[in-house]
Length: 422
Image (tube, rainbow, N blue to C red; front, side, top):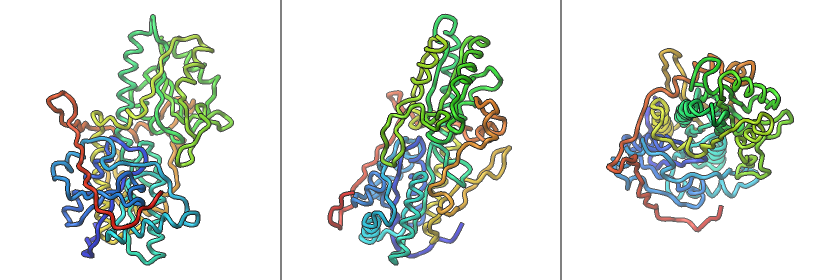
């Protein structure tokens, strides 16, 4: 690892986008690594909005035990947001405000923990720092349950949602199989994944063999074929007695339209989806007449720290520590990424990658990971996915029988600048 520098200055850490079961493990890695190096860390309240509004948190006010407890606490300890900065040309004022806040608080390292859009933000701020002559080191820190960041082998947060999904499919399928003779014939689970089917693919780990659940997986990388889908479900029910379907929220028809498009857009300009599971369930009922149930885990799948992957939790912590090391070693516009060094037994390491190769790029499922019929994963996908859900990292439990999660004090740093409305 590069040698640490001695120049003074604080680090600012911020969380972005949808949180995960292990994003706070990354925060713990950041704060503990910085403390070990004698560096101060502020956190932005609610992501980049906190930086713009000068709503900063002094993490030095938190105890060693509280920071350590972040490793097993889900959610975003400092708050997150879905707020996409426009281009430098379209809204230079926002970027200049960020530099102004950095300057006022002697922030020399900005660590932005998020996905594609966050990597783009960190890259743009690093470019503006150079253009304005302000010495700022911008480090993107990987996080996304969608597993769609380029360059990195996998994304912190994905391994845990993959484990939760595989467990849920296995358990729910046992329930369906028990009741299929007189009750539900088709169970549909909708999982996250707008453009990339990684989470849906992870459901394939629930079982092996032609008749093992899920018997049908629907990927956004493959156009939805209604006739082929109905034929597969019908054949499965007739042969097995029941059928489990796992569908990515972002599956599209042959014309490229989301099956569940609601007609609205979110803060990033993405189409809002209204739920693909009820659409599929209605189709099964209308065309095949089968009794069905469907489920939408939604936040549950990314908040399930009780079922987290030990591998994922370890990787999330490691990228946080590496981000601090990079910032203190004067590295700029990079991201600590996970590199798979060995398939079996699984081995990995962390190394820096340029943000320019990650920002605004999306990694979808390779063609060789989806079966030729489009309804399941291949052996190659299984080899890739299986190590990422290995190991258990349960949180400690309290006397009430519930996980003992930490809530930080989040002491505010006094403002030095006029208010700014983002």
